[in-house]
Image 1 (cartoon, rainbow, N blue to C red):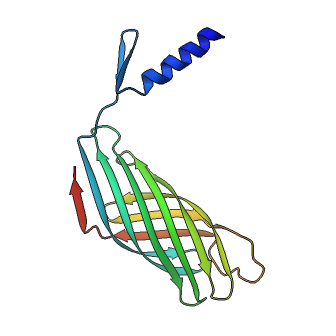
Image 2: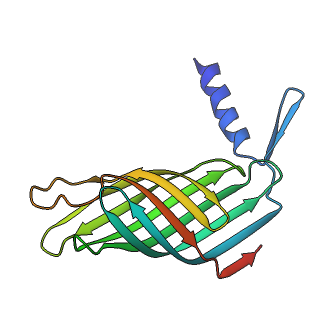
Image 3: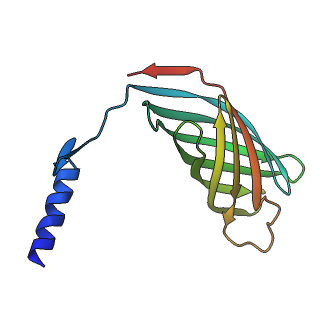
Length: 168
């Protein structure tokens, strides 16, 4: 038992280092070639049972590597449904590991019809190419008897217009 605890402790300490050796095998965590910080506004359309117009701002951080580049993004914005008079606010995060992989994320959301309100979380899965980001998700909102004219399942297409770039 003591040997097992000692082995696990040494493994945790060794894995937190930039490189460590196990027998003849050397494992190294490589730094990205370039880090890119991008930001800009987005305009989107969300379709489900209802159609919403989305407007917001997104911050992206990309670590450019030869194998498995990663992108992390934070966004905040609002959406509005003209026909149902429903206003929503969202703050979210998504990540993409690889060049052609899916994006996985979630949004904290608040919806109001100006007399009742609901809040919740919206997990999403999507695909991003260039400025277009297509997402599919589900709004998991608090229960309400009077205010049900929001999308439960939705498809969202956002166009992110990057206007700030910083290379490090």
